[in-house]
Image 1 (cartoon, rainbow, N blue to C red):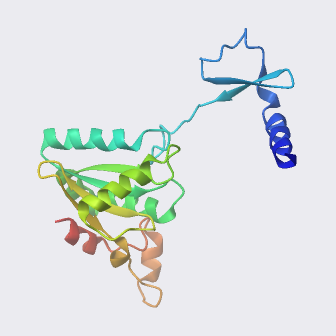
Image 2: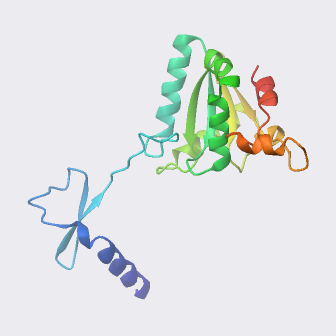
Image 3: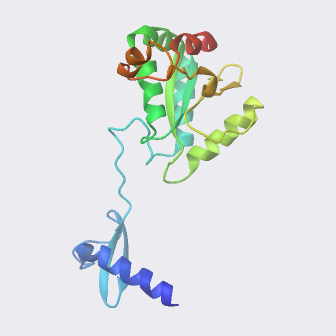
Length: 195
Protein backbone atom coordinates (compact mmCIF):
# COMPACT_ATOMS: atom_id res chain seq x y z
CA UNK A 1 0.00 0.00 0.00
CA UNK A 2 2.92 2.32 0.76
CA UNK A 3 4.27 2.00 -2.79
CA UNK A 4 0.84 2.52 -4.30
CA UNK A 5 0.50 5.79 -2.35
CA UNK A 6 3.91 6.90 -3.60
CA UNK A 7 2.90 6.15 -7.20
CA UNK A 8 -0.33 8.10 -6.81
CA UNK A 9 1.57 11.02 -5.25
CA UNK A 10 4.11 10.95 -8.10
CA UNK A 11 1.30 10.85 -10.60
CA UNK A 12 -0.34 13.78 -8.83
CA UNK A 13 2.85 15.85 -8.92
CA UNK A 14 3.67 15.02 -12.52
CA UNK A 15 0.20 15.79 -13.79
CA UNK A 16 -0.63 18.80 -11.64
CA UNK A 17 -0.14 21.00 -14.68
CA UNK A 18 -2.96 19.04 -16.33
CA UNK A 19 -5.41 19.82 -13.56
CA UNK A 20 -8.71 20.76 -15.12
CA UNK A 21 -12.37 21.28 -14.76
CA UNK A 22 -14.20 18.50 -16.61
CA UNK A 23 -16.94 20.93 -17.67
CA UNK A 24 -14.37 22.99 -19.55
CA UNK A 25 -12.56 20.02 -21.06
CA UNK A 26 -14.72 16.91 -21.55
CA UNK A 27 -13.13 13.48 -21.21
CA UNK A 28 -13.65 12.36 -24.77
CA UNK A 29 -11.61 15.12 -26.47
CA UNK A 30 -8.16 13.57 -26.10
CA UNK A 31 -8.12 11.19 -23.18
CA UNK A 32 -9.76 10.17 -19.99
CA UNK A 33 -10.35 12.32 -16.94
CA UNK A 34 -9.06 10.88 -13.68
CA UNK A 35 -9.90 12.25 -10.26
CA UNK A 36 -7.67 12.10 -7.18
CA UNK A 37 -8.44 13.94 -3.92
CA UNK A 38 -11.07 16.03 -5.67
CA UNK A 39 -8.71 17.23 -8.42
CA UNK A 40 -9.40 16.17 -11.97
CA UNK A 41 -6.56 15.33 -14.35
CA UNK A 42 -6.53 14.78 -18.07
CA UNK A 43 -4.79 11.56 -19.06
CA UNK A 44 -3.83 12.33 -22.62
CA UNK A 45 -3.44 9.69 -25.28
CA UNK A 46 -1.59 11.99 -27.63
CA UNK A 47 1.30 10.57 -29.58
CA UNK A 48 3.15 12.36 -32.36
CA UNK A 49 5.34 10.50 -34.83
CA UNK A 50 4.59 12.03 -38.22
CA UNK A 51 8.16 13.26 -38.71
CA UNK A 52 9.79 10.00 -37.62
CA UNK A 53 11.04 7.01 -39.59
CA UNK A 54 9.40 4.55 -37.21
CA UNK A 55 5.73 5.23 -36.52
CA UNK A 56 5.46 4.18 -32.87
CA UNK A 57 1.98 5.70 -32.45
CA UNK A 58 0.47 3.62 -35.23
CA UNK A 59 -0.75 0.06 -35.30
CA UNK A 60 2.14 -1.79 -36.93
CA UNK A 61 -0.16 -4.40 -38.50
CA UNK A 62 -2.03 -1.63 -40.31
CA UNK A 63 1.22 -0.14 -41.58
CA UNK A 64 2.35 -3.51 -42.92
CA UNK A 65 -1.03 -4.28 -44.53
CA UNK A 66 -0.99 -0.86 -46.21
CA UNK A 67 2.47 -1.54 -47.62
CA UNK A 68 1.42 -5.02 -48.80
CA UNK A 69 -1.66 -3.61 -50.55
CA UNK A 70 0.43 -0.95 -52.26
CA UNK A 71 3.07 -3.50 -53.26
CA UNK A 72 0.43 -5.75 -54.87
CA UNK A 73 -0.89 -2.92 -57.02
CA UNK A 74 2.56 -1.82 -58.24
CA UNK A 75 3.98 -5.36 -58.55
CA UNK A 76 6.75 -5.01 -55.96
CA UNK A 77 7.87 -6.74 -52.80
CA UNK A 78 7.84 -5.18 -49.35
CA UNK A 79 11.16 -4.59 -47.61
CA UNK A 80 10.37 -4.52 -43.90
CA UNK A 81 12.96 -2.78 -41.74
CA UNK A 82 12.35 -3.87 -38.16
CA UNK A 83 13.92 -1.44 -35.69
CA UNK A 84 13.23 1.71 -33.71
CA UNK A 85 13.84 5.44 -33.83
CA UNK A 86 16.78 5.73 -31.42
CA UNK A 87 18.64 2.72 -32.81
CA UNK A 88 21.81 4.04 -34.44
CA UNK A 89 22.24 0.93 -36.60
CA UNK A 90 18.60 1.11 -37.72
CA UNK A 91 19.07 4.70 -38.86
CA UNK A 92 22.32 3.83 -40.61
CA UNK A 93 20.53 1.08 -42.50
CA UNK A 94 17.76 3.48 -43.58
CA UNK A 95 20.45 5.97 -44.68
CA UNK A 96 22.07 3.24 -46.74
CA UNK A 97 18.75 2.32 -48.38
CA UNK A 98 18.23 6.01 -49.24
CA UNK A 99 21.75 6.54 -50.59
CA UNK A 100 22.02 7.11 -54.34
CA UNK A 101 24.26 4.06 -54.75
CA UNK A 102 21.47 1.71 -53.69
CA UNK A 103 18.19 3.68 -53.62
CA UNK A 104 17.33 3.26 -57.31
CA UNK A 105 17.64 -0.52 -56.96
CA UNK A 106 15.55 -0.54 -53.78
CA UNK A 107 12.86 1.82 -55.14
CA UNK A 108 12.46 -0.19 -58.36
CA UNK A 109 11.87 -3.47 -56.54
CA UNK A 110 10.49 -2.70 -53.09
CA UNK A 111 8.04 -0.74 -51.01
CA UNK A 112 10.05 0.01 -47.85
CA UNK A 113 8.08 -0.19 -44.60
CA UNK A 114 9.56 0.41 -41.17
CA UNK A 115 8.09 -1.57 -38.29
CA UNK A 116 8.75 -0.14 -34.83
CA UNK A 117 10.02 -2.65 -32.29
CA UNK A 118 9.18 -0.18 -29.53
CA UNK A 119 5.65 0.67 -30.70
CA UNK A 120 3.39 1.90 -27.92
CA UNK A 121 0.92 -0.94 -28.37
CA UNK A 122 3.55 -3.69 -28.81
CA UNK A 123 2.20 -4.63 -32.27
CA UNK A 124 5.70 -4.26 -33.74
CA UNK A 125 6.94 -7.28 -31.82
CA UNK A 126 3.86 -9.26 -32.85
CA UNK A 127 4.45 -8.38 -36.51
CA UNK A 128 8.09 -9.48 -36.12
CA UNK A 129 7.06 -12.78 -34.53
CA UNK A 130 4.55 -13.50 -37.31
CA UNK A 131 7.11 -12.68 -40.01
CA UNK A 132 9.65 -15.01 -38.37
CA UNK A 133 7.11 -17.82 -38.31
CA UNK A 134 6.15 -17.18 -41.94
CA UNK A 135 9.83 -17.18 -42.95
CA UNK A 136 10.47 -20.35 -40.92
CA UNK A 137 13.47 -18.50 -39.46
CA UNK A 138 15.30 -18.49 -36.17
CA UNK A 139 14.04 -15.98 -33.57
CA UNK A 140 15.79 -12.63 -33.60
CA UNK A 141 16.70 -10.55 -30.62
CA UNK A 142 18.40 -7.48 -32.07
CA UNK A 143 17.64 -4.61 -34.37
CA UNK A 144 17.69 -3.77 -37.16
CA UNK A 145 16.43 -6.79 -39.04
CA UNK A 146 15.18 -7.08 -42.60
CA UNK A 147 12.29 -9.09 -43.98
CA UNK A 148 11.40 -9.35 -47.66
CA UNK A 149 7.71 -10.07 -48.14
CA UNK A 150 6.29 -11.06 -51.50
CA UNK A 151 2.56 -10.29 -51.37
CA UNK A 152 1.82 -12.30 -54.53
CA UNK A 153 3.32 -15.57 -53.28
CA UNK A 154 2.86 -14.85 -49.56
CA UNK A 155 6.49 -15.76 -49.00
CA UNK A 156 8.74 -14.14 -46.41
CA UNK A 157 12.53 -14.07 -46.27
CA UNK A 158 14.32 -13.15 -43.04
CA UNK A 159 17.70 -11.40 -43.39
CA UNK A 160 20.08 -11.32 -40.46
CA UNK A 161 22.14 -8.15 -40.85
CA UNK A 162 25.06 -9.36 -38.74
CA UNK A 163 26.37 -10.99 -41.93
CA UNK A 164 26.52 -7.60 -43.67
CA UNK A 165 28.31 -5.56 -41.07
CA UNK A 166 31.64 -4.37 -42.33
CA UNK A 167 34.52 -4.75 -39.91
CA UNK A 168 36.91 -1.96 -40.84
CA UNK A 169 38.50 -1.23 -37.50
CA UNK A 170 41.92 -2.43 -38.67
CA UNK A 171 41.86 -1.26 -42.27
CA UNK A 172 42.98 1.84 -44.10
CA UNK A 173 39.43 2.48 -45.30
CA UNK A 174 38.22 3.10 -41.74
CA UNK A 175 38.27 6.89 -42.12
CA UNK A 176 36.21 6.75 -45.33
CA UNK A 177 33.67 4.45 -43.70
CA UNK A 178 33.24 6.66 -40.64
CA UNK A 179 32.30 9.59 -42.88
CA UNK A 180 29.46 7.60 -44.45
CA UNK A 181 26.06 7.83 -42.73
CA UNK A 182 25.67 4.05 -43.07
CA UNK A 183 29.11 3.27 -41.64
CA UNK A 184 29.24 -0.38 -40.71
CA UNK A 185 27.16 -1.93 -43.50
CA UNK A 186 28.56 -3.38 -46.69
CA UNK A 187 26.21 -2.08 -49.38
CA UNK A 188 27.47 -4.60 -51.95
CA UNK A 189 26.54 -7.53 -49.73
CA UNK A 190 23.11 -6.06 -48.97
CA UNK A 191 22.47 -5.49 -52.68
CA UNK A 192 23.52 -9.06 -53.40
CA UNK A 193 21.08 -10.57 -50.90
CA UNK A 194 18.19 -8.34 -52.04
CA UNK A 195 18.52 -9.38 -55.70
